[in-house]
Length: 466
Image (cartoon, rainbow, N blue to C red):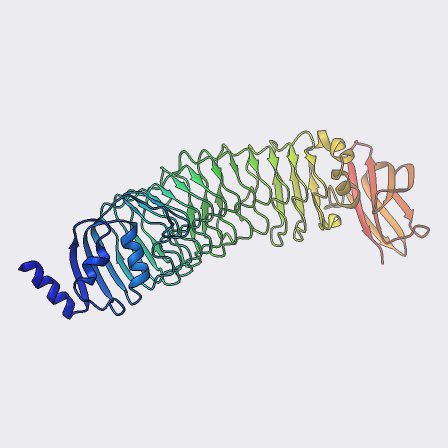
């Protein structure tokens, strides 16, 4: 009698609550109560369910907005014909794939015994909050993808794996509770522009390609992730509000474009284990670190630091052996390169494409200067840039009416005049403290003069004539 009373009260409230004794009986049980299925808005189910019951909800309850499955046990089911998409097999304790795709549900209570949320289960649905039961270990691909009203994900203290696009393009998702996940698949949170924070636990061992691309994270703290040694390509690209980035202590490499096209307001903490910066890693991303490239890195991938326009200088650590194609492309603000390797790093094509070399001061150890002067692309700076600016009265120069006048406290033993492309225009031995060079007969208005002093010191002069 008590059970009947609950049913009658529920019917008056346009809500049905009952116990479905066996999986597959939901439709017959509901129809036996004479409930208007077309207008039913609220439903609570107790007992067993399988994919057939979820199919009934999807097809026959168009007005349903609230669904309570907290006490439900999901049973395994297989069919000779597909029920959702092309799926014909539905495991036990797994919310069937695509079962609520595009649903107008706004509130749902998931089964406490649930282990897995199936592929595309809630994709494009109207649910506003998801509370993941403690036993859930996996959210499969597309499970909550493109949900326009989803703002909060709670629970999930047992969650281990988040599938591809699982929460992708949920633009209004603001908070996700702390979940000790081990794997975050590619595109898992791509486009979650309202998501300001995410807790990265020590259990995390994999971050896939584009996992947080375009998300709104303010701080990326991976320092506790002891087993995370690779960050996927584009994983944290296209962010505009990053305050800090802390890398994993065991990080060996970061994927292509991992942190590209971002704005980072504070320093990036690099691990000592990092040996390679991959292609496009920081393209379009200005770092405020004193040392942008950490010591220990031996290889820098193509375009890694290209398209910067604020940073004035870069230190190339002694560990660097190779710099890839167009690594510093269009770095329009660059004024100084401090190259510390004792052997000039090998270079890919057009490393400094678009950089005004005449405005860049290159510093190298005196003992290896000749190696840099003769090395491919490095030599461009020594011909069209300035290695050492005259800064005191010991060495001065001036140009008046196309006559270059040089004065030195040390005897100038010889000089060589180059045009901006490095072609020798004139050379002479002088053995004097004053030298005059006539520029009248030479075309162009940019020149470089190399002066050798008696004490073996070498001075370079860059001249721009009107």
